[in-house]
Amino acid sequence: MADKILLVDDEPSVLQGYQRLLHSQFHVTTAVGAKSGLQTINRQGPFAVVVSDMRMPEMDGIEFLRRVLTVAPETVRIMLTGNSDQQTAVGAVNEGSIFRFLTKPCNKETLSKTLMEGLAQYRMVCAEKEVLEKTLKGMISILTEVLSVACPAAFSRAARVRRYIQHVAERLSLPNSWKYEVAAMLSQLGCVTLEPETIEAIYSGGELTPADQAQFLNHPQIAQDLLKNIPRMEPVAWMIAHQNQPLPKDWNVSDREMKEMRLGAQLIRAALAFDLQLRKGCSRLDAAHFLSMKFADLDSKVVEAMIELEPESAGMDSRTVSISALSTGLILEQEVRSKNGILIAAKGQEITSPMLLKLKSFSAKGSIDDQVVVSPRKLA
Image: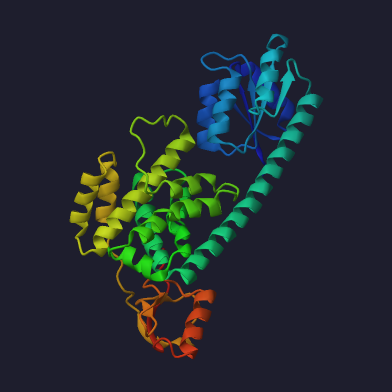
């Protein structure tokens, strides 16, 4: 399908004129007024380019295009202005909120040329975004595998926390839920710097020495340092860094991204506390009551969502196989420990290529039992 262009003006006759000029060359949609323009973007988007008049009642072109930037950041924004509005328009361009501005009246050749440039800009932005998203996805996959192999207990806890948060995000219809899920999955990444015995003691509710406790409390900051320089991971890194830090109730959170970051940190903190209570043998209701008492500012809907999530159970098709017969994609239904008690792989971990090599290496040395219980991958 051709990339779509939206034209917004408060005068229907002007829009009809643009429609006649451009319909043979572009896929054009029109909207009368800024409010209708936002509704059209919501219902019929995405649009590659949005062209708006400057002077409109209720909402001028600059404010309208600023809102377009919020709801559709990839969309290229162009403004039509009269001579008296040029200085205002130049300021808007300099702020970075508008791609081009054109002076009215605008002839067909100039308008068509600018729209072609806008479409080219949109396609370039989308192509870069796709490459970045694929790179980011691959980076997250690598970091997760490193955690699963180097620190199985931390990985297991992170996987459980991700499951809680994924359910909460679906239940509450949270936008940008991928940020919360990635933050949960990488929330324990800094634990790769800790001794395995320290991690197991922490996740089982055991006692720690002051030195071990200090090291553990620093793991979110270590994770942030690892992640903060990866493009688009800055908000995720912030959530992870603040997972153990209650935020002031009166903190200014008017910024949308800061609201997401604050919520993400709060969700991780609550999910970690909920998981620890379950690991100590509490029921889901008792764990939820603990959350309500500990986190007074936590939305009750978050607690309700955690209660209703059923505990993970062993796969119905689980079977015992030898290490030599394992293949990637299977799920461990039991933890694997070395004969001297060190955790090698946690229950619920997927057998990835690195994990398979690790298990076979320990098996070849006779350090672990040759039999493990596995099941096929659970469908989402």
